[in-house]
Image (cartoon, rainbow, N blue to C red):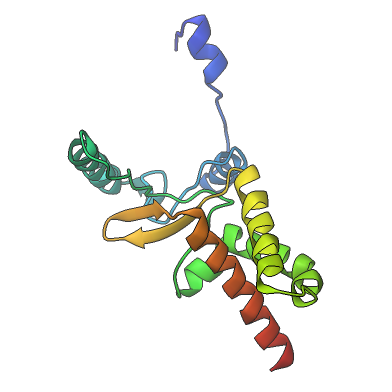
Length: 169
C-alpha cells in the first residue's frame, strides 16, 4: 500500500467492527444513511445504492450545467434543519438542535413587544445555525434543496409557536 506524501496526509486507516468504523466516520461529519454502500447486507457490502447515487449525481450535474437550478443534496449534514413531517425528519440532529435553540430563546420571543422583534430573534437563530455550517433543506423529488433565509426564519417562527402550543396544551 504505497501513497505519495499528499495522499498519506489525507488518508487514515481504521480497524474494528462495522459499528465502530461507521461511528468513527460519523465523528468526522460523514453521514452514513441506511442505504449507504458502507453498510453490510447479509454480511456483504452492496454497491447498488452507491451506483444509483453516482447516476443521480451525474444526471443532476448535467441538468444543472448552464442553468440557474441548484444542486440537490442527497445526504443532509449533522446541523442541517430538514423540512418535513416524518419522525425521521423530526428526530434529525439538526432539527433537535434547532428546537433546543428555540427553547433557549422562548422567554425572549414570548416577551417580544412586536412582530418585528420576534422576526429578529428568529433571524438570530437562523444565523446561529448558519454559523455552524447548518442549512435549511426541503425535499424536492430527488434530493434536498436549500431554502432561502425568509423560509428558514418562518420555520424557526413555526417552532416557537409549536413550542408554545405544546407547553400550554
